[in-house]
Image 1 (cartoon, one colour):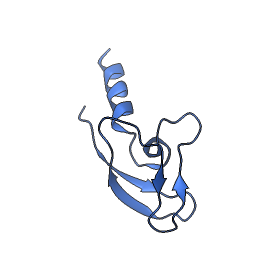
Image 2: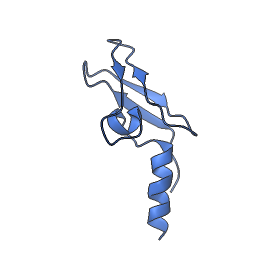
Image 3: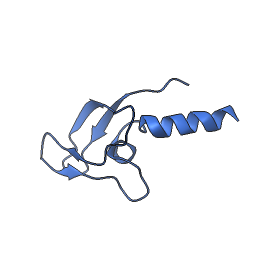
Image 4: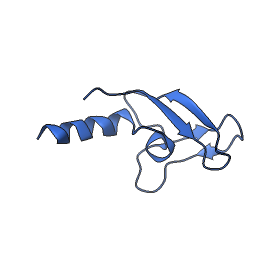
Length: 71
């Protein structure tokens, strides 16, 4: 499957949504909501803010899931 790099991140405090480009080669641990200025951090067990609050999992996790689908 194709790796996707655009994800809509939703602030859990104010509900504001914004489409962002996810980093290709690292997990993003912090994200500041442009609406309410809340600093988002990954939920326990998630590697990054996109896995916690995004519409898609981050590219690193997408790659692992794609590799699992092959076998």
